[in-house]
Structures are given as C-alpha cells and as structure tokens.
Length: 262
Length: 373
Ligand SMILES: Nc1ncnc2c1ncn2[C@@H]1O[C@H](COP(=O)(O)OP(=O)(O)O)[C@@H](O)[C@H]1O
Ligand SMILES: [Mg+2]
Image 1 (cartoon, protein in one colour):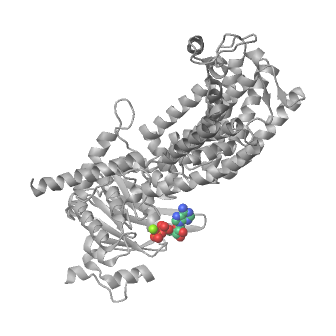
Image 2 (spheres, rainbow over the protein chains, first blue to last red):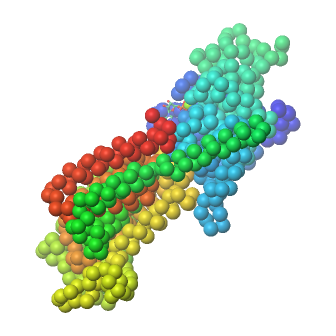
C-alpha cells in the first residue's frame, strides 16, 4: 500500500501550503499533506484545530484563502462539491447528514439522480441499484423505501459509504464518521473503511478514537491551532506521542522514530 | 410445506402490511381525513341550502381554486425551507400594475399581463437573492416586501389617477388574445348541453332565460388544477423535486451532495411570485378593476392551506396534493358556513379549530412516517 509512495508516482492528493482565514481567525495556516492510493491518513487534533476546514477545502465545500491542491499530479481547483466529485473525491460526515424525509435510494443518488429518457426520475433503477449497493455493504439493510429519518445512525452512514463506492470515489474524506454511532456500528464502519482501503481508495480519516487510529491508519498528521505539527508513519509513534502533539503541539523531548529502530 | 417456504410466506405478508401502511400513511392523510369530515358535515347540515347544486358547487370551487393557486407556490417554497409573506401584497401589486399598464398607459392587455408577470417573477427572484445572500430568515425579508409592495400598490394609483381603484379593464380586454386565458371560461357548449337535457338548471326568466345557470368553468379553476398537477409532478417525479426536499431539510447536507441549494430556493421564490400573479390576473380580469387593498392576508391563507395539507413549517416535508386539499377545505368551510346560514364572523373560529386539529393530526401522522419523536 505504500508501494506507490516508493515508486515515485504522483500522490493521489497533494495539498500545498493551504491557508484559511475567517476575519481574524486563522483556521488553517500553511498546511501541506499528501495521500496515496490504498492508504489511510489520520488527521488528528483538538476541536477547533482546523481539521474540518482543511478537509472541507479538499471536498470543495470551502474555498482556501491560498494554497494549491494537486490530484494525481495535476492542479485541481475545487470551487464546489460538484467539482471535487469530478476528481473522485467524496466525503462522509459526522453529522450523518442526509435528506431526512427522502428514502435511501433518493439519498444515495442525491445530486446525481438517474433519469429515464423522458427526464423524470428513474425510481425503479435507482431502487434496484441502491438495493444492490447497500446489501453489499450490509446484508441486513432493509426498509429501502422508508424515509431515512427512521434509520439508525449506522444505516445512515452505510448510505453515505455506499454513495462513495457506487460513484467510484478515488479519494474519501471521513470526518469523524463514527462520532455519532454506538460501539457495534463503529466497528462496522471500521470494517468498511478497511474494505475501501483494500480496493485502493485513499482515505483521510478524522478521528478522536486512538484505537481506531492505530487500527486503520498508515500515517497520521497532527494539527494544532491551524498548523501541521507533525506527520508520521504510524509505526514511528505511539499513543503518548500523538497526545503530546495534539495537546502541546510538540513531541515528547526524548522522542525518536520508534518503528525503524525496533 | 417446508420451513423455508413458510419463512418466505411470512416475509411476504410483512411486506404486504408495510405496503398497505405506506399506501395509507402519507403526508396527505390529514388533508384527506379533513376533506371527508368537512364534506360530511356540510352534506348533513347544509344539503338543502343550494350548496350542492350546480351554482353552489361552482361557488365554493372558485373560492377553493383561488386558495389552491397560491397554496401550490407556498407549498413548494415551504418544503424548500422558506416562507413568502409578501404573497398578498404581490397579488395587490400585480393587479394594480396590469391596471396601470392597460388603462392608465393604454397598452394592449396582453402586453400589460406579460410585463407584469416578468416584473413580479423578478421581484420574487430579488426576495430569494436577498434571503440566500444575507442568510436572513425569509420571514423577515419577505415581511419587508409585504410593506414595500403594498405601499407602491397604494401610491401608484393615487399619484397617477388620484384614486385607489382603477377600473375599465374589461373594456380594455375586449378582443385581447391573452385576457381570456385568465378571465374566460371553458366548456361552455357542454354546460349548454347539460342545461338542455336537464342535467343542470336553466334560468327561467330575464335576459338569460333558457341558458344554464352555470355556463362554463372559469379559467381560474383550470389554472388551479394545472398548477396542482404541475407542482405534484415536479415534487414527486423529478430530480428537482428531490432537491426541493433536500434544500429544505438540511441545506448544508444538500450542498455537500452537490445540490444547487441556492438555485432551488430562488426558483421557488420566483414560482411563488408567479402563482400570486396568476391569482391577481384572474381576479383583475373577473372584476374588471384593480384595488389597492386586494390580496390582503392571502399569504397567511396560503400558509394555512399548506399546513393543513401536512407540510412541515420548518421545511423538508410536505405534499402539493395535501396543500390542494387544504385549500379545498378552506374554501368549502368558508362558503359552506355562508350556505348553512352560520354567522359569518364564526368562520374564523372554525378556521382556527380546523387549523389546530389538522396540525395535531399531521404531527401524529408524520411521526408514524418518519419515526421521529
Ligand atoms: N464557517 C466558519 N466561519 C467562521 N469560523 C469558522 C468556520 N468554520 C470553522 N471556523 C473556525 O475555524 C477553526 C477551525 O475549525 P474546524 O476546522 O471546524 O476545527 P476541527 O474540525 O479541527 O474541530 C475554529 O476556530 C472554528 O471556530
Ligand atoms: Mg471538525
């Protein structure tokens, strides 16, 4: 999975020197990072550290004040979520945000609805495609015609993940995807994350759950007050190192890379 | 029978129940129940009053159709998460503009109507742009337009004609090709035939002796039915309809899924203005005049019809058919009390009770549908 990194192929995503200001607030200050296919990069930090802003800039939901983004080596100007999707970037949010009163197929295809040649919604095809996509991820998924307001948090997240897979995302942003879920649903989403990674999708994962981070991530990047204060391969750090970076913005004084020496 | 097929049977039955449930429990259910209740009530109390003969039916149909026209616009806008409180003032303003263009300025009526439509839909777009650009609640923005438009509706005729009512539109509309699409009637020959064979009554005296008491369906009703069908198909059969639901439910989530939320909202403000202008044009063509006080309180009547019809005030949920039924209930109650000889001031009491009952029932139905608590 880190082969691509070693062969010198351009990264899937490269973000260079990204800045974002809101009036006097510097939400993101000169952050650079990259992502390779089949890799999970953890984005960590306190609340308000700027993680969501950085990811929203990548997903086209927010415009950077300055900085460049390259996708597969080519400059990419993300003006809207629509543009980002054209680059194969999909996002899964902590808020489980869906159109509550519409059913699962309508939500899966939201913004990219299938239509018949008369231009009306092709409900039949959307239902059958959605059934297949959702059952692949979770065989227990029933009630496809019910408003998603009736579904559990886990089922809602499955819809969001199915959306990414169905539309063949290359780059997936998961912004605290399990923050609103219970333990068993969290485990299910972790499983799905590994499955997506095996299919060669590159994933940015924002999470506060250290167990998840060490289980899923290949690399981590820690943000503190809008700055990137450290990026490491996961073998080179332990939980205490990461917590120190998150809280103080620096590594413990006696730190040295852990993975290579041992 | 093997266990496996038994299992399958059981599954099928569950599916059937849920399908039955789905067919029954829908946003329109409250409107359907209300409509049945209201008709039952008046069939029992006012059957002999003339409410259900040809003239009576036409009477409450026209009133209901008026409510329907503005309710369709208000319904789609509310589902998209916004309000328009300037609908009533827009009705007065649009009517006055048609009168000023066609009578004061002596333009052809078709041109007066077209320019008025363009102007009013444009004002609707301004409403929408201000709401999405400033992020202010549409409640406040359109409240401002309620005053602004009403003010102009009183100001213009006073300055130009030194009065608050401009008449003479009937004469101006004589021979115009567009005016009959709003002020005309359709189906005349059918009603004549029905009169001849005795299906409906005919006048026995006067200049119209021998003619049927109802001589056609006013275009107002055709517009109402057309707009309801259009709105229903748009909402339930097109992707734009899904976007309306998404924009009103969680605008941020909709944006993140690539739904052009701002465009959806602005278009719905424009559609609401369009509906108000249709209402105004029909009214002006029927009365032959435009008055500065026309359309007063219509915005609330539209919103009430929509809410009776099951829509959620906070957006993201509702039905055009429900809103149309809400308008029908509204019209039938208003005219029915008149037929039943009830003191007309009690109309408001009835309306308040119906509104309260409908909202309680609708909340209960919605919880059944969405599982929210
Ligand atoms: N739309 C916005 N307008 C103004 N300030 C914002 C906005 N979004 C985020 N911020 C500010 O930017 C900073 C970083 O926020 P965010 O990226 O959400 O942090 P995180 O996701 O790491 O918790 C915070 O101080 C937050 O208040
Ligand atoms: Mg965040």
